[in-house]
Figure 1: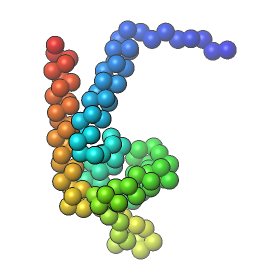
Figure 2: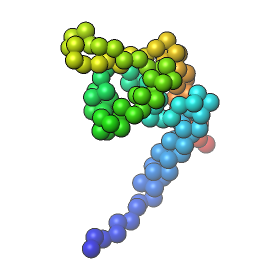
Figure 3: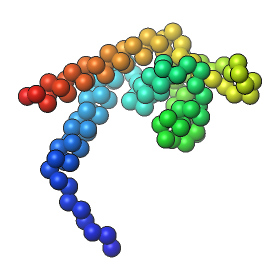
Figure 4: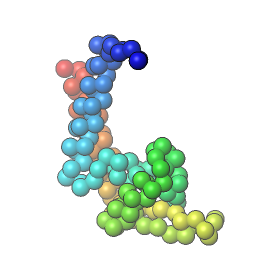
Length: 124
């Protein structure tokens, strides 16, 4: 049997901060009706025009079917569209719609707010 390792207080504090940040970020995205993972996909596509599902899966260390499911949701919400690659006719590229681009800006603003709140909490 393996030994139980004790968590040092500084590690616990870091873990608590990460969990608090995750919770705050999730809560800040609720009015936008987007999950943190969907937000991550949108921001990735904002920075990597013409990315493929495979590129997203690699970047997020996830399986292609998992990413495909999220892309399908984003496509139904009309935030993302698919189109054939100009370089490889067999590949399908993803691109943010105008609504997706506007959402990306709102997500970035929420990230700035959460980061600011976290800095304030840290200083207190």
